[in-house]
Amino acid sequence: MVPFSFANQEWQLLTSGALYWEREDALLVADLHLEKASFFARFGQMLPPYDSRETLERLALAIRKTGARRVYCLGDSFHDEAGALRLEPYASGMLAALTRATDWVWITGNHDEGIAPVEGGALAEELQMGGITLRHQARPGETGLELSGHFHPKLRVTVRGRRIVRPCAVASDNRLILPAYGAFTGGMDAADPAILAAMQPAQSIKALVAAGEKLVQYPLWAAA
Image 1 (cartoon, helix red, strand yellow):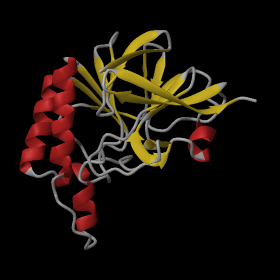
Image 2 (cartoon, rainbow, N blue to C red):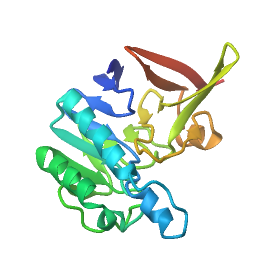
Image 3 (cartoon, helix red, strand yellow):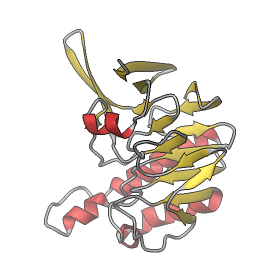
Image 4 (cartoon, rainbow, N blue to C red):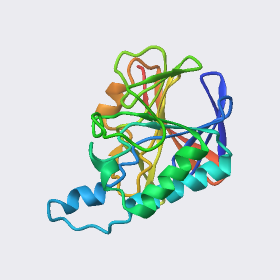
């Protein structure tokens, strides 16, 4: 876990892409996209049906590592509205155990806006915590403090002739976009115009990558 400051508070970014909020003893994750494989299987695209297991196992490890008492999922937790109903018994049991062990909140996203009832946890479109808005998608023009997901940002850089791609967070002075946490999620270039536009207004925007015990920061955009 790599500590850093945001919104005058202390946080820790895990290499898995989860964010630990020390003051609230809370773990935040975005874009789990549970049951993505079973969604595509219905249309004949057969993927290994273990994405939910892998994602939930990684999430359980992050909860154990941080000791978090609260979990906030920032939208698109399921790949579609009926995803929760397709969980196989092992993944369903694991999710039930996690939601029993913590105070769990599902913030809905564009994929799971009409989500079927999920065992454990509370549903919310967005949430205010400690003066920070938790929502799925960054709202252009937002001047308050905000945490979101949606874009699946990835940093793409070339180091010594080697192309490196890593999931990353995207940060401005008052807003933070988390990387996608799901096992089967792709990603968008962190410097994509859609991400930079969603983060405005901003004086500067940077990518954050947890690399071992260091927080690596790459500038993405700065006001002229």
